[in-house]
Image (cartoon, rainbow, N blue to C red):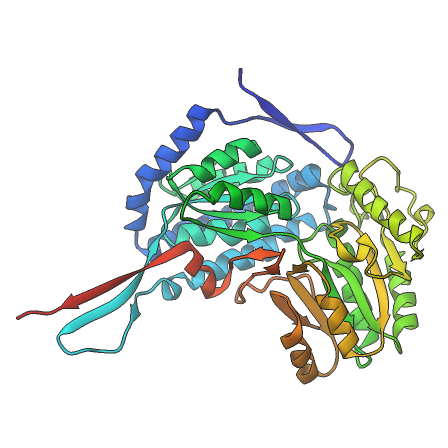
Length: 464
C-alpha cells in the first residue's frame, strides 16, 4: 500500500494537500532516468542549457500569482509578500547564475608551453540531489537547482513535506521549457528514503538546506562514499549598531530583518548589540515599529505578520522567551497588542527582549521565530566578542557611517557574510557560505559552480 503525507496549512489547520510518498520502484526509476540523461545533457552546449533555464524562469514569472497563493497556504507567509520570492530573489538569483555560467564554466588555460596544449576543464559531477526547506522554498532551492543544471548535471529535488507543491512547480516549469526527460525530477521522500538516496552510487553530490541535526544526518549518510555535501544549516545572526549609526535606518531595517517571514529566515536577525549611547532610543524606536505589524490571516492584504509554520514551532520559541524571563530578561511586547496571537496555534506575536545575556537560549540557540534579544555594549571589542560567542556563523551585520572601521570589524567576525547597513539579503554575485555549525560549502557566485563541477586536466604533447 502506497504511503502518503498531508500538508497541514498554518493558515487555518486544514489539509491543504496530500501527496503519495515515492515507492522504492519510483526511486529506482528516477535514478535510472537521471543516469540515462546525464551524458546527453553534459554534451549540450551551455548556451542551449541557458535558453531552457531562462524559459523555465519565465514560467515562474508568468504564474507568480498562483504560486504565491500556494506558498501562503503551505507555509503561512502574508500574500502581500509571497510574490516577491519569485519576482525578486528567485528571478535575480536564477538569471545571475545563468548569465555567468558560460564564463564560469569555461576551460581554464595555463601558461603556454612550446609543443604542448594544456588546460583545465570543469566537468559536471553527475546527478545532484537537492534537499530544500519550507521557509523560502524557491529561494533556497534555486541556489542549487539552476546552477546544477547549468553546469551539466542532472537533478533530483526533494522538497520539505510542508511545501511539496514547490517541487511540482519546478517540474512544470522545466517541462514547459523543453528540458530533456530525466535532467530534472522530483521525489516526495521520507528521511529514511533520503538516506538511501544519498548512499546510492548514482548520486554524485548533495545540496542540503536545513537544520544542524539534518546536516549531521546527511553527512552520516554520505560518510561511506567519497562525495561532497553542501550544507547550509542553522544561524543565530547578530547585528551591531555602532555609536555612529544612522538610528532611523538601523531601526527600520533591523525590525524587518528580525520579523519578516515571521522570523523564519536562515539569515534573519536574532540578536542585536547596540552601543550604550544609542541603546535607549534604539530600543524605543524598535518597539514602536514592531507594534505597527499586523498579525493575522496571511491571505488578507493588510496582514504583515503571518503565522509560523506550525504550532510546535511557536511553542518552541515561546519556551525560549519564558526561559529568558525566568533568568531576568524583560519582554517589551504584550501579546495583547496583537489580537490574533493565540497560544497553542501558529499565530505568535513578535517579541523584543532586553536584559538578556548569553546564558539564555534566546541569545544562543536558533529561534527561527519573531523573537529578538537586544543588549547594550560599550565598544567594538565587546561587540565583536559577543557576536563571535555563538556556535553559528552565517551572516553578521554592522551598522555604522564608517566603512573602514566596519571592514576592520568584519575581518574579526566569524561569519560567512558580513554586511554594512543592511541584513537578511543574498547577493548572487557573492559566495553564500557559513562557518561553524552554519555549515560548509558554497552556493551562488562564480565560486558556486566549483562545488557542482570537478576539474579535469588535459595535457597534450603535440607531435609532428
